Image (tube, rainbow, N blue to C red; front, side):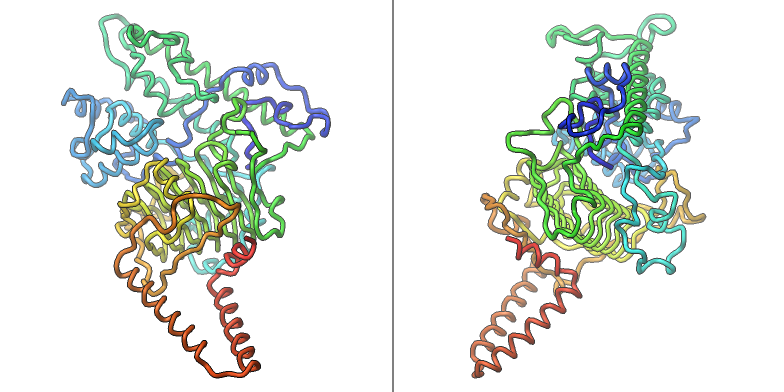
Amino acid sequence: MADEPLDVSPAAATPDAAAVSTPAPVPASARAAAASPVLRPRRESFEHGLLPIPKLVFPEGTLTQTLGQLKGKLAASGSGRVGAAALAEALQIPTEQAALALGTLAAVLPGDDGPALAAGEADLRDVLLFLYIQSYKRLVPRAHKDSPSVTDVWPSTSAFDGYLSALSPIQLVRSNSRRFMPSQADEEAHQLSYLQKHMANVLTLLADSVDGEGDESMVLTMETFEHLGFLLQFSEGTPLSQAAPFFANSDPDMPAAPVPATQIHDWILQNIASSLEYTAEKSTTKENSQQNVSDPDVTMADAGTNTRIHSSSPAGASVQNSPGYYRNTSFIEAISKTSVVKQGSDIKGHSIKVLNCHDSVIYILAPLKYATVYGCSDTTVVLGAIGKVVKVEHCERVQIIAASKRICIANCRECIFYLGVNQQPLIVGDNHKLQVAPFNTYYPQLGEHLAKVGVDPNINKWDQPFVLGVVDPHDSLSHPAGVSDVQAESATCLDPDLFANFLIPSWFEAEGLTKYNPFTLPEVYRASQRKKNASLEDIQKNIRELDLDDNRKKELACILHAQFKDWLYASGNIRQLYCLQGE
């Protein structure tokens, strides 16, 4: 899943055209699309905005009618805002689930979610769009030539193989049907096709009825039209209303007149069709071309046997600000037995994905909005400051250290989560032997990064998981029969005696004001730390007071080193030691 630019022609994507063979001709439609903004789905809404709550998922045949009736109920107050109590009553769900739905919506809105959270409510139009896409089914992964194979990364056998049901979520990930992750272009095309199919119904749901006949009776104001930014965006960040000819250059003091929904529908479908055509032609051109496009991100081929990797952008270059690189996601994919460091200058956009990594230590020391960890095993991932959502899915024996507003954990096994989170950790799907613990690390810029993305270190709900059911209705893969009513397994709190601080190496002479963990440790964990420190001081004192000759001192040192080495290997901390030695 190379992180190549989607919005430039294949020829333009190659930094040195003279160094590669002549690319295949670029179709005229692709050249035209590359020269103008391309309509894209907002991936955040589809990747982080779906909840496995059955009563939020309506049958496709009655979806528009049901949401239309719901709109009437929720609009009765006349405020245009929806709170948790009103949503719970309208949907006949517990208030806690309604609050979760509104919090999830706030996390995937294009703008800041602060006002929505502070008021505990959301705009009715955003709520309707959020509920509509709950009917979306994810793309079933299939083999791709350009995606790294899971077998390149995962061990050939797992502790769970032969023990769990063949239909367990992790087994499905490793089966042939999910051997490869879908490419970025495939997922976006799938989402665009979904929006193409449903856009008429979406616009009908949002439209206001006015005096008139036929198509002219349903109109959208510019303000309502802007709410479609929850679902769609242009590749260069152009606001929808500025790209649309019927709202472009409108005077803020003189609002544009409402536009018939049919006119908006035709314009959106035209842009979606152009985008799908451009993506298909670009994919074909790439397959037919012999050029090798360089990838600035770390992949299996880059990693090799290196112990530590730091990938940085060229001096003075800001990839995420380049119009041709309007991609808001960076990837760390398919690395094994490697340590990777990513800082702000190394990351394109506001989102990071860590995919199919094994036996590695990955440091993401940057302020971001979204982070995804998928398909990893025996790996430690440090996520410095995530302002919206962290999602961890289909992982085994990973340690996640994350400071974030929210985290969603799905289909994971034998994982430990060291969390500094402002909202309850959401646990969904088929999970086993999960443990949670308070946040346990820091780096010099952490306090600055937390403030930048709006994470409050004075609030930590690490030990208050919110658990939903096993089956995810958005997953296109089949599930074992009879498990729809099974309660998902929650997480247990890590034994304080097993809690330890995680030391992040101070690479690159980083400067910052953070000198300690900004999240307050619960007293039981602080007491355990004090006890360990006291025991260590006693041991050091006893060793210093031993009356030994030089040979016996050397023998004792060898025994201690051997025991420490055995512990490093048994605990999986040996790679962390390599990182520290690399300073």
